[in-house]
Length: 396
Ligand code: C2E
Ligand code: MG
Ligand code: MG
Image (cartoon, rainbow, N blue to C red; front, side):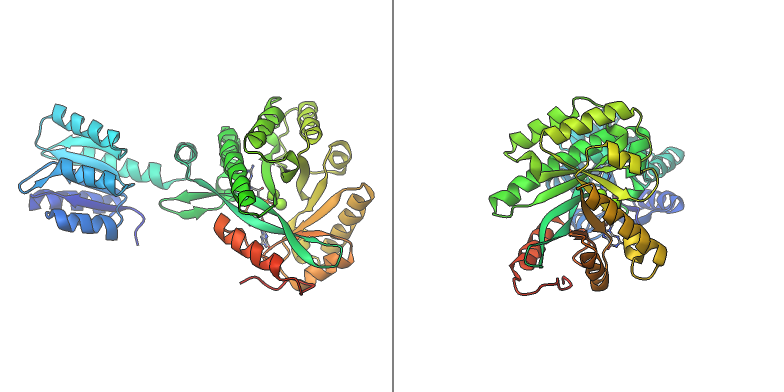
């Protein structure tokens, strides 16, 4: 189905035809109707991204249809057109906004073709593209959601149990579906939106941890934090008050520092990390072995855990060099008294290899891909209640 879908209701067939032509030229899939019932049906079945609504139709009231759109929580952008004078149109536009609708604008009939074309085109660009503007809107609208990937830990009796999850941000996008963080986290870092994004993710995670706790599911949660925002000295206190507010112990939160290479002020970052650690949060260095993460940082910074980057883990069985890197990181971390998590564990063979090299924490598609909070909770319960197996089965 075309990502840009326009639904138009107008009692004049000539106007319908005109709007159809202009919209199709710009690239929309178009449905037009003159019948309010058919219109309501199409709102549901066609799921338009844009609605062009005639306000004055014999036998139908445009304002009533606006109210209907608000009732069904329609997310389309709405453009009103009418022979009514400009002032009236503006009033209706404001009414729509007051109902919580996304009002694109108002046009007087006869419909000015160039203006309509520009409006429709701009709407496609703003809504369809992944850019600063659309990301800011997504953060504000709560379209950034969190999925969770289980982490397994080797217990004393040799079984792997899920004791933690990693929180991974996703953008629920009207046009692109679920957008992965590689497509928007770097953009958030470049534009400074990373702060707002992280706030959203932390809030959502803490609430989720509380909810799971209340349901008897006690887990630690790892949250990714870009090194580039480790410059706000208030951050450790803010995070502490957020977790306390929800009755969560600091030690349940693992802050994974993702290296973007831009740690603007190392002394300041060190100050923040040390205070986070003193407050009881756990600290992990992510994607270790790649890019900017270095032995010096491992030595200087107060990390509890190293996460070996998945590119090495995934190749550890087949590639000598990758295996050497994995073994070296394990040896190094163990001698520094740090725990190690291997990410990107896709096979039982890799897990066995890690176990034989004293790696006690793992994460990867073998256990599960990142999934919604509900799916994660189900999977964790099922996995941890399966007491017999010494090795994990592949999750359904
Ligand atoms: P990461 O923290 O290293 O997360 C692990 C990534 O590896 C996730 O990708 C996960 O889906 C993927 N992965 C896990 N197991 C396997 C496996 O067995 N095989 C393969 N091929 N891949 C696996 P995802 O979710 O696309 O996240 C990508 C990166 O985006 C994360 O890497 C993290 O650096 C960043 N990120 C995600 N959420 C946030 C956030 O809330 N804030 C910040 N600052 N960064 C985030
Ligand atoms: Mg991570
Ligand atoms: Mg990683």
